Amino acid sequence: MRVLLGEHDDLAELYAPPDQPWLRVNMVTTVDGAATGDDGTSRSINTGADKVVFDLLREQADALVVGAGTVRIEGYAVGRKPLVVVSRTGAVPPTQRDAARGRVLMATVSSAPYLHQAREILGDEHVLVLGSHRVDLGRLKDELVLRGFRHQLSEGGPHLLRDLLDQGVADELDCTIVPRMVSGSHRRITDGPPVDVPLRLATLVEQDDTLLARWFVAR
Ligand SMILES: NC(=O)c1ccc[n+]([C@@H]2O[C@H](COP(=O)([O-])OP(=O)(O)OC[C@H]3O[C@@H](n4cnc5c(N)ncnc54)[C@H](OP(=O)(O)O)[C@@H]3O)[C@@H](O)[C@H]2O)c1
Image (tube, rainbow, N blue to C red; front, side, top):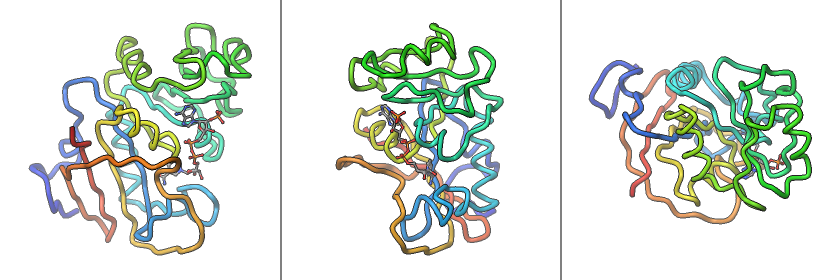
């Protein structure tokens, strides 16, 4: 591992979250900007070095905040960290339906067609209604802090990342660039209407030609 920018030579220290409520987003992309490979998920583009940081960031998080689309497409299994699924429809992804109560939360809206079902599956107290038609992601972050989840890790996907940036909720972007070019018409790591958010590079690490960058949202 080569630390190209950063004050430590230990990954855990390089990525330590600050001692305050913090939401960071971890994404992976090819050099030519693809967020997925041929299988339609990020699994086909990530590398060993990316996986190391992916696991470390999960370890350092109190809870994961993930778009329902990504949970569905990537087939998230019930994991060790609480998972907060963000969804406009309120449909609980199939892989999360049998999770123990409290392991999965849903952030949704009062107009969600599957709101009632989400409450039945997850329990009323684990379904956060944060708006009528749009999930207020700032309120979500605050609500999660109140529940003891100060360090929040989002793993996307691209629509959720875009909305977190648009609503000024993301504090940090951890972006892995893998040494590949894939062309084709793949998603980028953001999707949706334009946003323009300046970033400041805090850390840059290289491992086996994979670049691991830690960016802070400039405020
Ligand atoms: N390269 C990477 O690091 C990376 C990371 C994650 C995902 N991906 C890939 O990205 C693709 C999925 O992209 P995507 O943009 O569809 O993912 P996404 O943002 O996770 O999914 C979109 C869905 O999530 C919910 N959602 C997202 N933002 C929301 C918001 N602000 N408010 C309410 N609900 C919200 C909605 O679910 P409902 O339909 O239930 O309302 C929406 O239809 C997959 O191919 C996945 O493999 C790549």
